[in-house]
Length: 134
Image 1 (cartoon, rainbow, N blue to C red):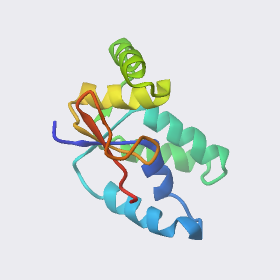
Image 2 (image 1 turned 90 degrees about the horizontal axis):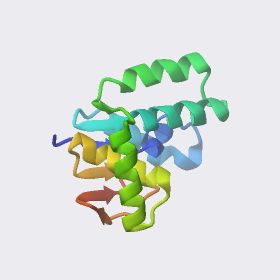
Image 3 (image 1 turned 180 degrees about the vertical axis):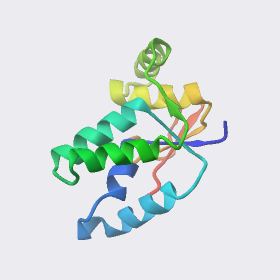
């Protein structure tokens, strides 16, 4: 698959109304208009929790967006992904959650992760991190 894997921050910036995040929000919305993206159930869960915790969206609005984001390929968090995350974590010293993003991207065959949270330009077991907001 030639899709780019999207981390949760991209989805959260897409719904941001904070004037200080206007440029990032615009960029995130542009990205989500593209078709070569993929994500995981972890990303969808994190998005839902953060969007509703901050009262940015109602539960219904956040749920509707989760359904809309499901138009992209979605990697389930399987035992194989968990094992992959543990391997990535041990090899690269990432947090488990960051390693799970990399492992899900690997499972989908993605060679790029779009993330503000992981180190821009770093390659983790064949998956390159690109911060789309720099």
